[in-house]
Length: 85
Image (cartoon, rainbow, N blue to C red):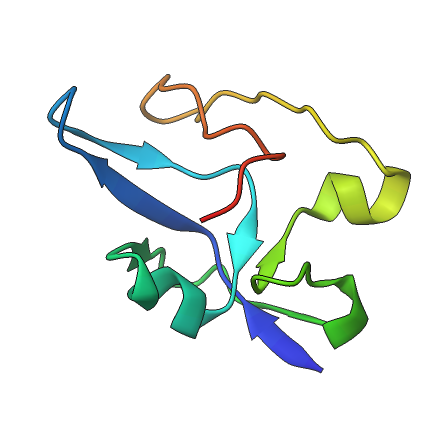
């Protein structure tokens, strides 16, 4: 099993944090300057990760490739689940 986390990335263009709809390993998040959202860890089978260490729960369960959701707290659109770091 491997731990994956929700995370956010800084969008310099808008000057705001953008929350990802996918989860990723801590090393993948840190590699791209993202911040882990504490308390969002989930243990998954390593075979559910893509080649870059990203995990999209909905894609893994239903093979959906283009998902948009809204962050209930900030109302910001999440990064498309098909996008990877």
